[in-house]
Length: 115
Image (spheres, rainbow, N blue to C red):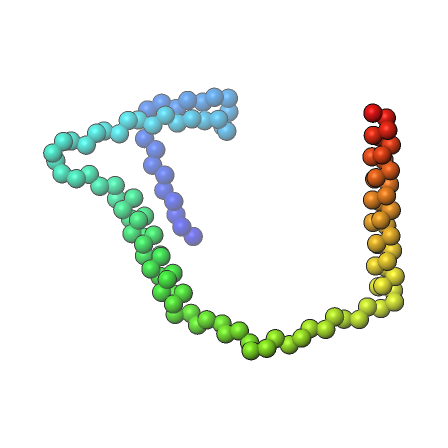
């Protein structure tokens, strides 16, 4: 479990109607002094380094993982035979679907006649 820390530096909090509509107006960050060197954002640098390290580890793991070889010839799969009851149920379902489509088309035709 990772711990996430949030730092908030706000001078003003604007509330617009409830807890879901809270807006924080952050205080302006002080501008870096001119000529005093380079200003670094350590959080951003750490995040970039972690991302680079994660990509390196991922590519190394992908190279080290043995590739699965495809079998020379896959065994032929034969369909299971259906019982008489299952075939009958399939035909009944097909008839029910056809009747629903027919009723729907009849309703559309009757509606279009009204126009």
